[in-house]
Amino acid sequence: DQQVKQNSPSLSVQEGRISILNCDYTNSMFDYFLWYKKYPAEGPTFLISISSIKDKNEDGRFTVFLNKSAKHLSLHIVPSQPGDSAVYFCAARGAYGGSQGNLIFGKGTKLSVKP
Amino acid sequence: DTAVSQTPKYLVTQMGNDKSIKCEQNLGHDTMYWYKQDSKKFLKIMFSYNNKELIINETVPNRFSPKSPDKAHLNLHINSLELGDSAVYFCASSRMPGLADEQYFGPGTRLTVT
Image (cartoon, rainbow over all chains, first blue to last red; front, side):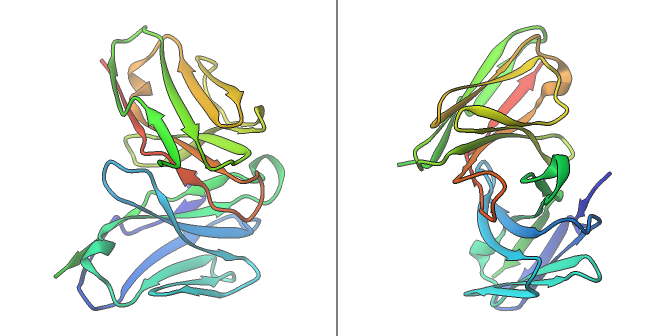
């Protein structure tokens, strides 16, 4: 049972344009969301996060939007650069019970930014 | 000056063997984790240790035994390896458990069981 879903396994974008990566979740108890970026043969690296009490967080070219009513978040990268080509994982943090503190990851979306 | 390091990077072994993967972090973090990324690419938590004490143990066969000799190290020992254990194993650390805090991951260990 996937609690965090990234329905697009891949995304191709032209350099300079906007990249939009989407993530849906099913558990309304999640209280914190994170995006990780992963290059081949490396571990995931933290990119940006957002608390469930906010609807937007921005860090340079990266903005994460959270729509709690729709249980949906998205990562916007503007402008996209070839170095952004990587797999992006959406993760949600469990707030209560046995999942407290756990990060639950989606399957990832492979972003390719073409020059 | 690697923050989270794992050894070995690649591990090929036969079914039934026992193997260990080592993890070290130099970030001064109190909490360390082991994740498994299977063939379907899901990253799933296996264990979490805080100050050398186990705090999360997801549904993992008891053939997997984590050991934390100190706060900076969390090793993973696997007994009687099976084909289904083939995966990439990631170690991670964070300042504390259960806080709004990102985790720092190691480069991963690709385990292949033949």
